[in-house]
Amino acid sequence: MDKDLIEKTKQTAELYFKDVEGERPFALWRAFDKDLAKDLSLFITGSMYAREKIPHQTRQLVTVAALTVLSRPEELKLHIQAALNVGCPPGDIAETIFQTLVYGGVPATNTALKVLREVLQEKGLWPIQAEDTK
Image (cartoon, rainbow, N blue to C red; front, top):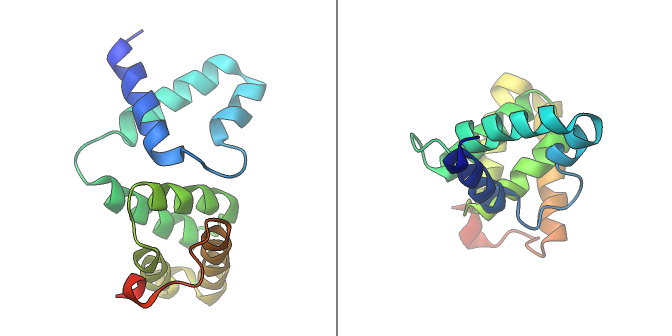
């Protein structure tokens, strides 16, 4: 096993998912198949999320946008937390969600904003401060 990939996977998982509320996908996968969970984690977290082509903040905002349009609120909650962990301001996350309205529709945007509000409330960051909405 590639020790560099394992270490990169651990570092990226810690960066994105430290202090994340709720069940992480890895734990769910592992409950069903340990080997597959490891393979998925190495690929997703160690290879894809760890790529250095775009900054982590950009990667998480893209992920928030995609999950908003797909109406995947549970996964969206995880990645809103990850976006905050990598330094995305709450206002940037909200604006990313608003930008998806044209593609995903008002219901998907409203659901995503509710998820964002829930995460911000849990982290004591609600209401958003004026400087966070620029």
